[in-house]
Image (cartoon, rainbow, N blue to C red; front, top):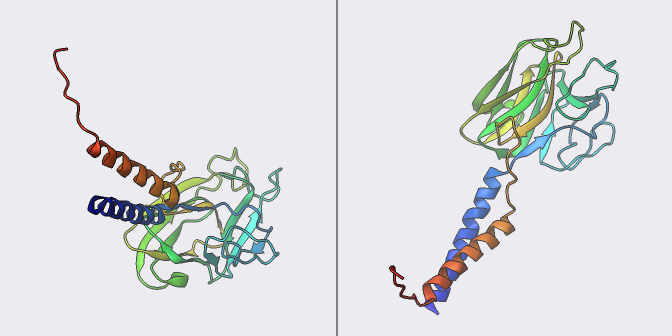
Length: 229
């Protein structure tokens, strides 16, 4: 009975540890598809809507009133081409150019950008670009670098920054109007999508199976074998 209780304790402990790992290792990516053309993003990713009445997945991420989305036209007439994914991009105007991740995120922040100015993106541990500055990410003027002579925003670069602590907001106040963004990633800095993170239930089952196998091996009598046979 004592051995059984010890085994159950191992399972619960492993499950709690793996659950914590899954929560801290979770990755959120925003591609802005489904948001309206020249709409305020607002609570599109926060269980609410953008200014056009569209709703996205609820990631608990809200945007200030200076955050807008635009949909790139297939023929390039909108001024944006070669987006890293889909057709919808993010840009900012005015002082409320921030996003809030109220639950917080850790480790890293990454995005794709196309910019006609030098700018800086800042990560804070408080909401709405307040509190302690955890990291800053510089972007360069490169929007038409590979555009065959036209003036479209057609060059997109990947940028990322790692940091310590828990971030709760990202400020774009120093990258407004002449910069566009796509594929914002919270919790990962790699340019390639990471391997899927198993759900907590899956991890718990895996832990249970491994511990059960270990327990079974301990209870099975060892067979003596002849190494010369």
